[in-house]
Image (cartoon, rainbow over all chains, first blue to last red; front, side, top):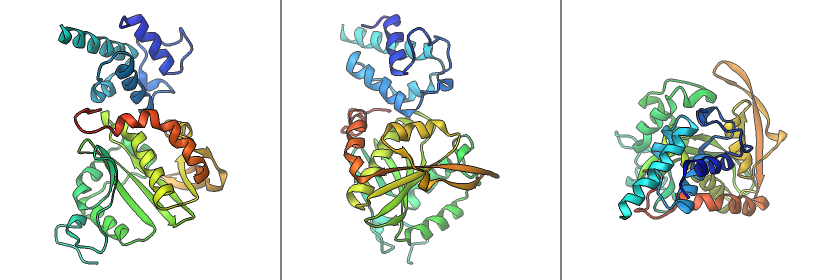
Length: 84
Length: 211
């Protein structure tokens, strides 16, 4: 599982948002539920579900939900091309 | 109190207080001395991070003076958090009444990827208070309006406790400080809740998180 729609859905769950309420261009820092624990949960999700090690520094620099989805997606692609 | 001209270095035993480290090789708290002064000053002088803390432009002399005074106290422990061999924040246990209660606070994390170690700071502080100091009650205060920190503590098992509510001047305004507490009997449940995520922060070097 690595398509961006799936990643977006999982982010909604991590961020405790009702399905369909999260916007791709939403600023994560404006989300009430975004904090250091959520950062860690995204890293844990990337590790256990996507089998990629996510860089906390890069994640903390993400401005929007879309940035996080792109980072996750790029990490998966990078890992897959490294495995070939 | 004896100290070298270069400040207090606990590793050289230049004061009657020895180094204190608690945690794993990858993530631990260490009693602050002069060696962490520059990192602490950078953190304290960050205006954005200090929004809910009384802002004072700290100098090295201010920090050394405060540190020396604090190291002489029996009721206060000020720690630096070290994660993956890198300074990652500060936290303190103070108003310590050994075996009874103490206050958890002065927790500040850098505003970058090291923020994820806030959970490590919380678990280390709570564990030290309950497991080493043996307190029955650990309490803290959060400035009303600091919802991120309030929610963080509540998710880790703290409960609002009006016994510890107080008012104080914060950056010129009279702020309501919301009291929170957790009892020693509740600590195992808190630990169980934090453990799945916290374990990722305490892994051995080589599987870096946040590098």
